Image 1: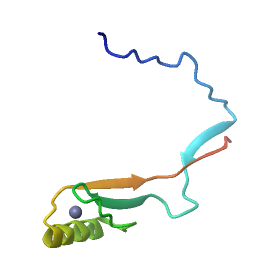
Image 2 (image 1 turned 120 degrees about the vertical axis):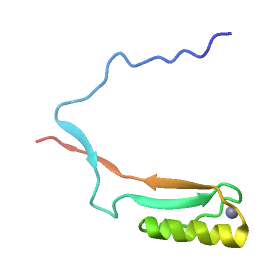
Image 3 (image 1 turned 90 degrees about the vertical axis):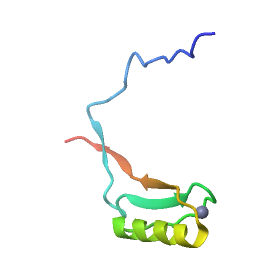
Image 4 (image 1 turned 135 degrees about the horizontal axis):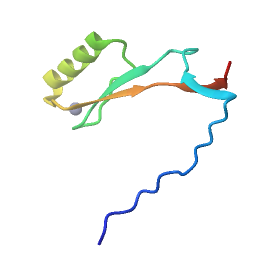
Length: 81
Ligand SMILES: [Zn+2]
């Protein structure tokens, strides 16, 4: 059996009057970390020092050492020009 075929779009609708940009009207990107063993999560954290502190504290009290970093970034379509 052959691998599933991936069909690339033959046409991309990209009207010149619109463009996709990073949305910086809100909080900006949000970072969270999650334990890959028990799925406990940090909730939104600010900065690498807090990520490191949360993961090392969780490893210390739970003994779990694998984590998933989740970064949510926001985009917005705006009028061009
Ligand atoms: Zn855990």
